Image 1 (spheres, rainbow, N blue to C red):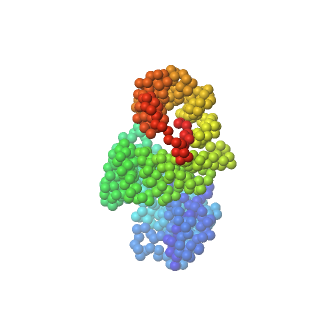
Image 2 (cartoon, rainbow, N blue to C red):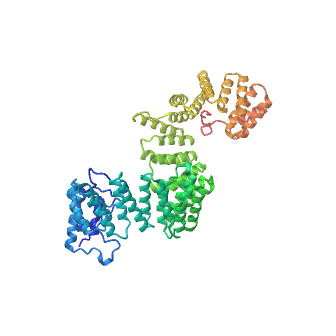
Image 3 (cartoon, helix red, strand yellow):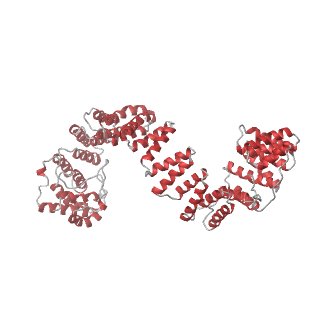
Length: 625
């Protein structure tokens, strides 16, 4: 025989009433009875609840045993009466779903006669009765529900909600609603739900003082469990909102005691309650308190959530090394945690540990899958870490997975260029350029043309490179001053080195210096332009200015020092020429041209050149910038 409780679970999808006011506080939200009516009989026969009804609302309209009654009094209906109650219930749902709430009311009346213990169903029926019966009938149902459920605070809460909703301006009914809640507080002093309703009623009625008094009453309770204190603590945050900075200290003083009691009442194994306390402290910016709770949870239980909070707390304190170790331990203990792996990859990248960043992001993608953006992030990390072999292997996969994502062809081109595989690099950039022709809009930007341009230049295709670099300059947004200045200087210097288009090169280099006047590399280009034009005094002036900007010389500064040495040599100052060329050689000891110039300045004879063969012919060198 089908039990009433199993069948009644279908009520959770009951349709709401139409054309009537709704309760002001959290209450019944009924759904889709029209769908329900067609399925209820089949479900009852099968003894199962269809999945569509599993997502229930807060209200429970199920038919069950009397609350607080002895077990032998439960569901004493005969089979015939039980079947009749189910029939009324199914009919009520169907009628209400069809918008016939007046007709449904009669059937709901029969159902609550059979099972007066379902407080939510009684409240719903009272609401229907208010619209299609009478107020006195609705109130009678709610008061009868109080008598039928002496061990539950819910009937008192339903009565208070009803009174506050259907007579919001009636002083007498307001007092009755307050009386119902006061009685609930007296009978059920350790029910967080009752305090919640009482606080919300007072706040809705702009009676903040009354809400505070309710919370004071809650704070005087003894032997309450952690769940009670957490529930009331959340209501305390409604009265003293943590976001009000002016009263933040007062809010902490008022709200903290509830969460402190929750922490004290929590059993040793009640990790979730302790975590909620830690999260409260974290959200209210009481970081030392949050850290103390989390460190204890991590030490005693190894709780992963507590450790994740600790990572954030250590970061907030500026303890980056401790935060890093904490995150490493989290990932080591649970390598399948994709989000933490990704986070660790980010941290490793920030710490310039690109090898570890790649390892963790790769593992996260393998475990949880990855989209084009995540593969793009992985490619960037490989590029930053100069892992060119791995990057070319990755781009071979990603260009197949995401054929229209041009960024992967750009990354491939950059990797091939770094390996001096210029033909492969050019093919990658060229393929991206051809694919872009068939795509809407202008998918290739200034960055692409800059990368393609310098690749062509290094491959010795100077005119093609200049065309792309000029296009990059044209496409670069005005606000991106640093990038466009660098591109202008690159193209200008290339032409200076080649001895071509010197006037146009000069315009570009001067414009780069105007945009970034204290850039040593740009000033060096200007000096080198004067050198190429034979104005060595002007060259020396600019090169000395560039050298002065460089407080501490780095290996990449060897070119500037070399230019200075060559200029001194052209001016006949051999000592300073040797001094600067020697320094340039120290900075870049593998550069044969600098070594030859130093030997010449020192008067050392050059070794006889080896016979040139196909095997020993030097590779054609690309431009230096």
